[in-house]
Length: 53
Image 1 (cartoon, helix red, strand yellow):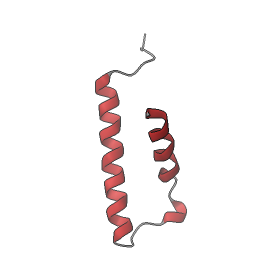
Image 2 (tube, one colour; image 1 turned 45 degrees about the horizontal axis):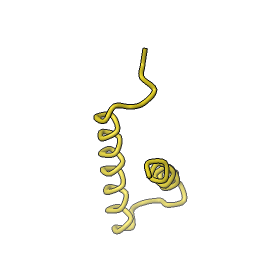
Image 3 (cartoon, rainbow, N blue to C red; image 1 turned 90 degrees about the vertical axis):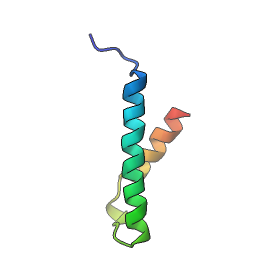
Image 4 (cartoon, rainbow, N blue to C red; image 1 turned 30 degrees about the vertical axis):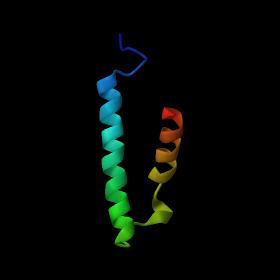
């Protein structure tokens, strides 16, 4: 049976992945290479950050 509450390690891994993806996106935004109209991760990241707080 899979526990409903993620372990600390799973939560840390998820946060690390989001941070890496956000850093990559921010770098591409600075360089003008990111297509913001097709970017759905901005909304997802905002939702995740509000859920975590």
